[in-house]
Length: 167
Image (tube, rainbow, N blue to C red; front, side, top):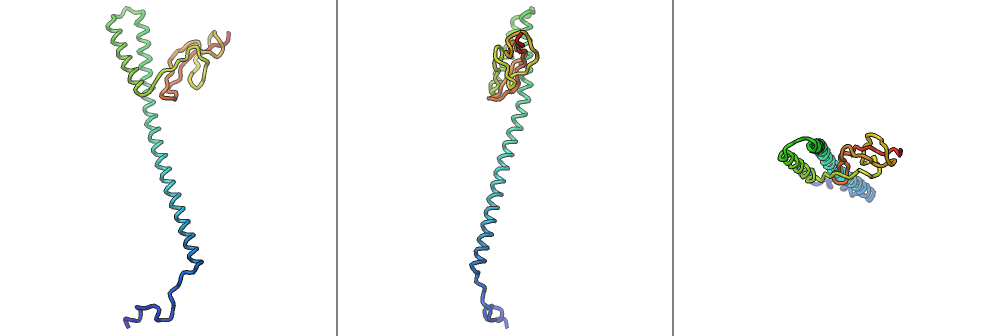
């Protein structure tokens, strides 16, 4: 009795041979699943790439905020040095402030932050912020109120300028 179930062919049924139709159907399903797997893998790779880009952009944004604040400190050093030209300040004090200003400039240059020239150039809203109009050649920058800076090829802070009104 135990031998009854050991050979399924003894009951007269034949094992099913996969027909050509079912093989084609299985191949089609395999192709669909393979394509779905490839798409999922590509989506995952794209997600990882986007996540890395967002991480870098966020870090860059944080760095840019700090660098912009440092530019304000640099502006204050320049104002202090201009004020010292008219005041009776000991020369060693001036040298100390100039030294600190130089260190700050070197730090900014280390991060590829550089000022750009505006005076006498045509006004460009991508690089300049017009504060006022004044007598002078129309559309030309007559006075630079605050220097503009770039980091690499991107504007970190536009220059604040007075633009000629053509009068």
